[in-house]
Image (tube, rainbow, N blue to C red; front, side):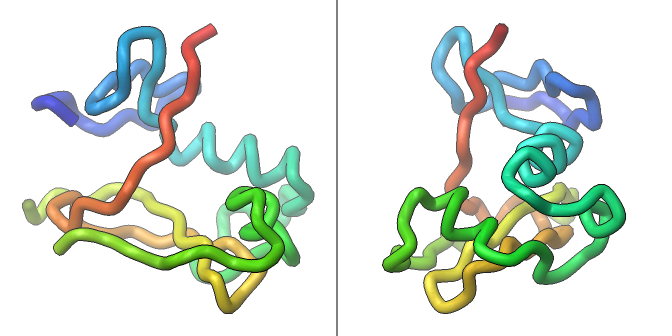
Length: 107
């Protein structure tokens, strides 16, 4: 995050660890992508596993992938896409866990 606080904006405007011209997606941006991929508006705000095959679409790999993360008390929305489940899991977690991120190209 390079000292920047979280954002609920769309776009988030938080560059964080992303290269110039890219930013870290906010929870709102993730939800927009998930609805584009097929999660219903009624389900998008749910916590836990949601959406059928959305995880595989996000990973671009129907065969699966390797789950992984690195281990502040400050929390942020995150997503898990498990190799054993084709749904996408929305959860709140501490930032210090250091999960991998996806950057979004600025418009």
